[in-house]
Length: 250
Ligand SMILES: [Zn+2]
Image (cartoon, rainbow, N blue to C red; front, side, top):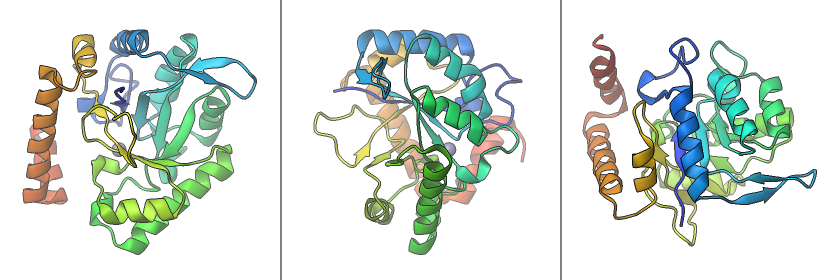
């Protein structure tokens, strides 16, 4: 059993500009996290050139530029790999990584996977829109980088049975969810992930390795409460209220 951690932007205020500050962690905190995660969860992976790298349970959503500028050098330094879920329509635009940067990361042992073409909620889409998003993002990553795309992380964790069915039919092997939990020994199509927030400390990360720790139970309850709020309010109203609470603005 293991745990998978979901990051977004990494760095100071300037480096994480354009990202959701609620999910952005400092470089110092990120370094403390990776040290603690891999001390207790080492998994070696063979690279194409025959060298070994520690396999990833660290993931990044959104493709923010700070992933390349701040997190990538730190991962390389420690010979660690991570999985990056990108929105292909955002590649190379302000605050986001370019194809050249993503290719450089892939060549160094990182995995580049899909977060959709646009950062839209899949639970709000029709079947043909879901197909289009999953197909376009997979094709663009594979043609620009050469990395086989088999994992999809749904934006905002919004997924349902239709998304699973369509993803499977297009060759995806896994959905990296935003639901907190321990990865079961026999992996199912959807794997849970723990969302790293601005102040998540190493004690919490260590406690998330156990299914029955207080931190894990608290995280599961927090996620379920947010999920109910999203269902009751609908995605648009939920986002509006969330932004108001986070920024104090409309
Ligand atoms: Zn996202």
